[in-house]
Length: 248
Picture 1 (cartoon, rainbow, N blue to C red):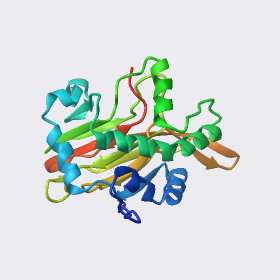
Picture 2: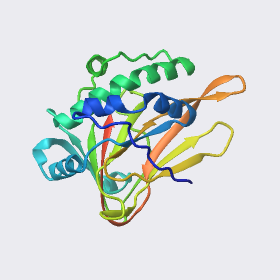
Picture 3: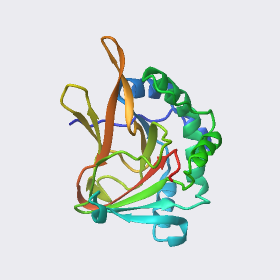
């Protein structure tokens, strides 16, 4: 497995919407099409990362807590935000979805899927609600020394958006060691291929959470994707995950 460094956004605006708009979306789309993931560079500022970490002990801010060991998901825990979510998280979810909807629709066409995705998150969440999926899925994950997350896919019902976003909240080399994001592509009639990606505080990545289209000799074919987190070697690692479909 290799590692990849995150590019820096071209400019930093005052709001989350400004910062998302300032990302190099042409490059992000190319990377998503070519490899199933794309780095965003630093998107959240240090005080924003600290603010999100500080929310973690506040029980009323979250709708549920999952201890990974109990379900054999890994070693660690995570909490799903309750509504209303923090404005920072809500704004990020809305802004990134808007930019990713065209890629999601292009992928659906390439994989000959009947799924389609509206331009706004609000409209997409109406589709989720019509299928009984109304619980918010953005979350904060916490790992201590020895913690890890097994390879998985974040699917919570019949409706699923094909991409998701993760942002590191802790400082690599200061707060924790290890804990790379693992992305594994299960290629048809071939061995799986993996990437190990080291993210520092505020840096984000967009990646396929289930399938992505890959070009072949006779057109596009569907490739299965899973993700996880490698073992934390020291310290405590926090990260935020932004999943765009709600849960049943």
